[in-house]
Length: 383
Ligand code: BGC
Image (tube, rainbow, N blue to C red; front, side, top):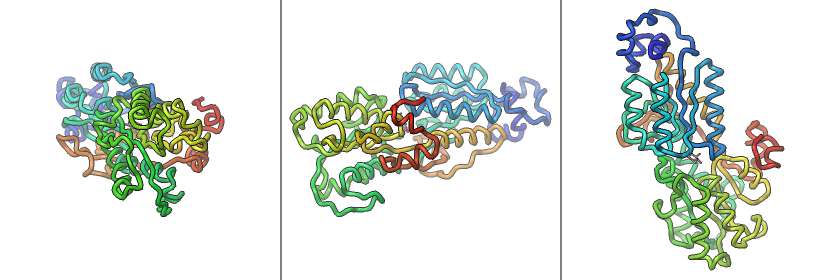
């Protein structure tokens, strides 16, 4: 398969990219002279972390279908949030002749040896949504502006609590409110960006006393949720209710949540403790991320307050564009070359923008853009 990439990119491009020159020489370069590669000769390995979250299923589907539309052969794998499974899947992709890899890691530091062996074979590696850390073996990163996602999560919480209006401007509200904060998986590089953006945005309110974190737990290692797991989040919320809120009788106004699955775990704990079924009934305001259908439906019914919409179709398009650039011997176009230092190098990145979705925004951002249908939102499940 290496020869087919060389056909695609030409030897000069391959040299520029380090694409499999050794294999070209050992293959005699027989297919290398002048012809344009057909995309179907190029195999793209796509490693996704899990199918337990809709967003990754949507990402996998979108990347696969857009690559196939462009004519590439696709090897798409999901790893059940299990690191050894993802390592094996990537090894298998390389063995099966992947020419380009697109990788959404489970643990950003756990893939170095697999990816270094891919890089040695000249395979370009595109980190998808989550940065791969601690290795030279990552060429490009497609993602959203993750710090800004965190800012938006906090803004949505502040709006739900009444401090910001629908334009996210200060309302002048001077009440004191109690919150808790949750963060994502500590091994996901995005977690620190989301949490940093959110806490920087909440800082002025925490400093002047309008907001208090009831438990006092505000350090990332105290509030992180391994593997973004819903049940883990529910358990931590239950423990907090017991330790700090009299089992559910204490004042709690809002919870910062970094992901819809975590939000649903938190909401279940709050409902079980008797805070009410909806925000109108007294349920604390909870933020989210990913516009998962179960959560969008809950937002529509006044149960979860907000989510952050990251259009997976647009991210898939960026990944496919990056893959196509490599396939034609070019470097993909970055719009950020400063932010994402993986500990070994600053990885050139393309960042997309995200949007806050409250009940007011569902129609425009999710239905009008054909992300979810009205029926899906009513049913709370994807068709
Ligand atoms: C993604 C989020 C997602 C989370 C849990 C993060 O890396 O950026 O969109 O909510 O993983 O799957």
